[in-house]
Every structure is written in structure tokens, then in C-alpha cells.
Image (cartoon, rainbow, N blue to C red):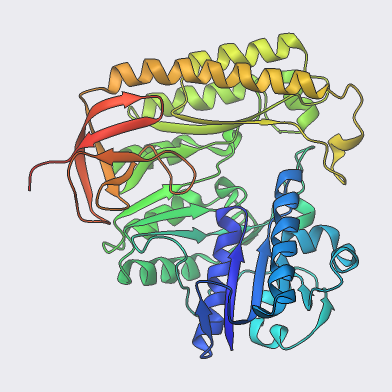
Length: 429
């Protein structure tokens, strides 16, 4: 069988695509980089927010048009869009040959031999994949340490898309990471909906620091990156471990969403502004060169101008290296959908633009300080790559003044910086 793949959404979804693609290849099936000529075109969808739903629906329409033209034989749809809308997907796209839930990815070969709507509950445990192909650059990879979420933030669809929090056993993660390192991966990004909760379901307490220590015992592993931590679970023990070794990038992705207490409470974020500030102050003290990235939601129901002004001051004070801003969108099934005091669309847009402008001024200040300094960089290509401050596919890229070997990690001097565009001078050979 020849199959082609469209993988949408976040890195966590990408790891699912890598795993079931590897299962198919391991059974002798062929992955086509272009859908034309495929026996089946698989679309692994995202359904997290409205824009992701729209993107997934457009991808399905385009795939069905390819089928109509005779360029692909079958169209199969899976992923979070299926988990969210279930039977409605088949109603909306009756010409799709197969619509199957995430559970069907575990036995992908058998699943693809069927037709119609195949729904099954999410698996209760995460397993070590038989092997995993890479849909990223060969020197970098995502390693999913857990799936699902128990946080129940008021705006979020993840708990009913991905189920309750389920950690992958530590020994399985160690084997998966070792296999990645043996295959040439130099940067492993640990991902989950909440990495800082890792192990709480298996070991009775969050165990991310213990996992990191065991991973660092493997000298084949060159660099680790931590994604998606929650502020009230970032411990001093974790900060001290990050500070103690260059093999864990001095980088942490902490989605904060807001800083004003009234908004955080309505979001059901389980922490207040004082806790957030205390965590960030601790990180900046313990890890002197720490790079922080975060996301904020503006226009959440009931957000006042005073709340937003507090957020503006907070962004100006804490100077995040990378920052994403999202306008709140009402998602069906979430606790926030029915909240009163919904914010007008034009107000949400205006606040997003103001916050982006505030962050732009922060980056200008950061650029003045970093010009001429040396940072660790990783080459994604001969003339471009990232610094330790930039996660793959999410943050910015840098360019190099001379060609370097893709996948290499080295110290480089920042010779120009404007906005998120920076140029680095690698050392002489």
C-alpha cells in the first residue's frame, strides 16, 4: 500500500503521526511525500481551537477533491477533530472513506482496511512505539512523555479531546530517547500537555526532574529541551537541574495565559499572579541565562481594561524572549463558553495588537543587550538555525554569516539583531 500523510496541529499530534507512519512502514507500506498516487491519504487533524478546526476542514475538502480527480484512491481522517465532533464529521464529509479516532492509530494497518466511522475510547496507557520515524529535521525530535490533561482550564478543549493525564513509563522514555540519540538526534524536546505533571499518575508525584536526571545519565543524549510547563509546578529542584548542565537547554516554555487574578480565577488556572511572579523570579535567579517563552489570551470574558493594563505592565517588566498572543474564542463544551461579560471582537483585536506592540518594544531592548554576545546555536541548515532560546517549529530562526554543517551545535556571536531576525557569526573552522 502507498500512503500519504497530512499532519496538522501541535508537536504532540506530530508524534502520533510519526508513530503510526512508522508502524505502516515497518509492515512494508510506502510513504509518499506527495499525495498523488496514494492508495490512501491520511489526515491527522487538530481540533483545539476554531482556526485549527477550519484548517482541518479545508484539508479534508482538498483531499476529497484529489479523490474526485482520481489522484488518490481513499481519504482517511483521524485526530482531535474526530475526537471532538465524532459522528458529525461523517455527516459533514460523507465522501470520506474512513473516519477513525485516535485509538485506531494503535493498530493502524487493520484500521485502514476498514471503512466508515470507527470510534473507540482513548487508550488508558501510553506505550513505547515499535519504532518512530521522524517528520522533522534528522537532528531534532519531539518525545511525548505524557498525553491528556487534568487541569481543566475553563477555555480549553484538551481534556475532552485527549482525555485524562497519562504518563509514559520512565523506562519506555529512556529507551525511546536512546533510540533517537543512536539515530543521530541531537536535540530532544520533551512534550506533553503539561510536562511538569509528568509521573504524577504513575509514581504518585510529579517526577520530571527524576526523569531528566536519568536521561542525562545517557551520554549519547546531547541536548534536552522542556516544553509546556505549568507555573505552579516549576520547582526549585527543576531550576537547579537546568542551571547545572548545558545539556538541558536553559529554556522553558511556560504558558501563563494571564497575570491578573480575576482573569486567572475565571480561567481556572490553579495559580494566582503572585505565584506566577514568584516562579519567574526564582527561575531568573537560579538560571541566570534562562530563556522564557509564554502565551497569553486577551479578551477572556470579564477581562477589564485594568486587567489588561496589568498584563501590559507584566510583559514589559519580565521581558519574555518569545511570546504568543491569542484572542479568546468561545469553544463549545468548555466552561468559559457560557460565561457572561463576553468581550467584543474589536476589543479583543485591539488588545492583541497592543500586547504585540508591547512585546515588540521588549524585543528591541533585548536586542540591544545581546548584540555582540555569544550564544549556543544549532544549525537546521547550512545557513540557518536557532539559538538555545528558540524551540523548533515554534520560535524564531537565525541566519549564519557562513555555511555550517546541519545538525551541528556551536557557540556563535550575534552580529545583527532586529525584531526576531538575528544573524550569527559561527566560529572559524
